[in-house]
Image 1: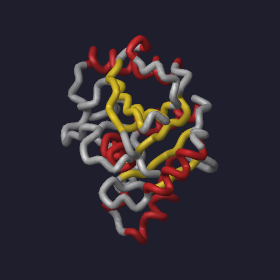
Image 2 (image 1 turned 180 degrees about the vertical axis):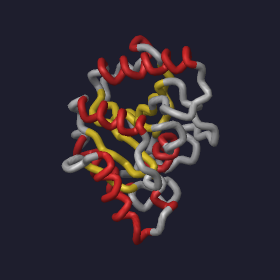
Image 3 (image 1 turned 45 degrees about the horizontal axis):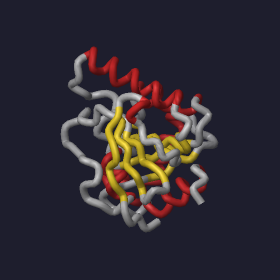
Length: 195
């Protein structure tokens, strides 16, 4: 897909701040520093539409990115590693869960994990949460450029076993090499009914 006019629209913490256009929303979840912002930049071929940081836990709001007025990418706060206080974590957890449970516009969840590591307890918790949401979802094994191309398929199969995936979609991804973007776009359009 060629994206012509992606734009950051709003950061939100409550429904009254959410966009009101009624466009489908594709939600990105994953631990801090797994590469959600880089994923957005790669998919829309922009270097800095979504702000990236070397410091985990910088995303503390729900960030809505309008993609050519066709749909939104919604970047949720990451979990784990953050230097937020317990009070901040509870607050962020609450408005994040409220969004995931109540938002009717959610068309697809993209759950990013690091291909190089076994899923953490938090990853497994999030995967189970996503499974129970009954929404379409994709699992993306990010940072595939960090391992040899000949080993990617083996790592994918190992992750499927770790997560207990037998039927859902698990694809490799790399923000660095950009070689998987077409496969991911195809799957997004198919599962989110964007055609």
